[in-house]
Length: 163
Image (cartoon, rainbow, N blue to C red; front, side, top):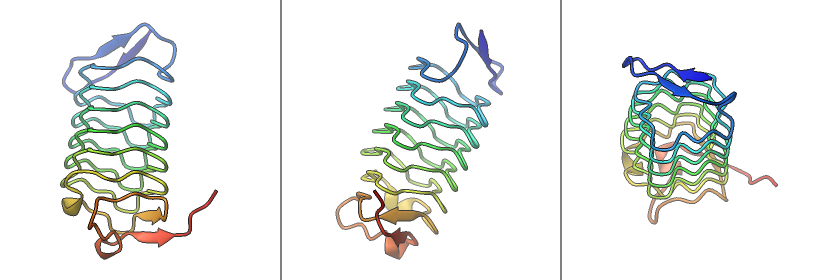
């Protein structure tokens, strides 16, 4: 049994031994305390993670389509190869997070902070990217951007693509 604590008092109990690969889709995890947790391969599609504490958490290869990560603190979290299509990420804190190979097509990111984040090979064709903080983020030639978006003028550091 796993209990996910939420600052709202609405804790979530799961009949599982691990969050790795767990089905957490469409759950209300508003203000959840998941700092440092490993949710690799978990399905969080449609889940409410607004204002959640996700610092240093591992969401590698997780499914977060249409989830809400608005105003969350996900600094230093890993979203490598995660599916974040159409996720609500407005005003979220993703400083130094790893989005390598992640899919953010259609994600709403206006007001979010991706300062010093790793964006190598990510599909960053998001909505509101022109209003996101990207200073010091690192990307490569495999990173995809919206048409007419100039990442370098927004402070993104372009690096050589690696295999």
